[in-house]
Image (cartoon, rainbow, N blue to C red; front, side):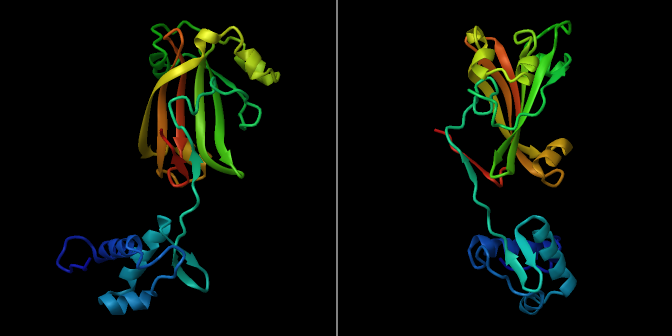
Amino acid sequence: MRLDRHSSIPLYAQLRELIVERIQDEVYKQGERIPSEMTFCEELGLSRPTVRQAIAELVSDGILEIQKGRGTFVAVEPDRLSIPHFNALTFSFLNLSSYEDIGLQPVQHVDPEAEIDTAFKVTTDKHPGYWMLQWPVLFDERIYGWCTSYVSAQVFPDLGQNIASGKRMIDIKSNKYAYLPVKGSVALMARPARNREAALLEIPRRSIVLAAQGQLFGRNGAVCEYIRTALRPDLLKLEIN
């Protein structure tokens, strides 16, 4: 890639793409120091503010990192947490055999809400609402994702109290065989993080997250659970087979 001084694209943006291209081609390898600002200036005939702006944006995006007193380095991509056999039920609460070690947050009761009612195919607002369950995808004390599950309070009227009292999952699900998830219709999409998701995932606002959202169906064919999950695509690897 060459810089085009007659292009409508600013020179700092062209330099940014040039550096990214060199990283992808492994001219600058992960963990290695890139040339100094002055070297770029001399090589490409650029002003120092132009070079500085390009590097500052790459640092902001996490592609480069500044090590005080040493220079600017290509950031090392972190090891990814692998989630094997990813499918619609991967982040289902009702599919868990135990909730004791997942970091489950205090269960909240949610009144009837249009979006959730639609997901559960409920046509009236005169019902007891839903239980909202939230927990992190956690590994080595680092948050990789955040799971939110909605379960019908009409089908599981005592779910909140059962969890608060420490009742075992096997007992909670006893006699609810027809209402446990066996399949789902879950969409996977990349989108900007909502403010609360960004705070929970400890990432800058509007960072891109991988969102899994949709309905889970029980053996009776009815919707038994609605999930919303936000995942960090820079830290996770989903294995589908």
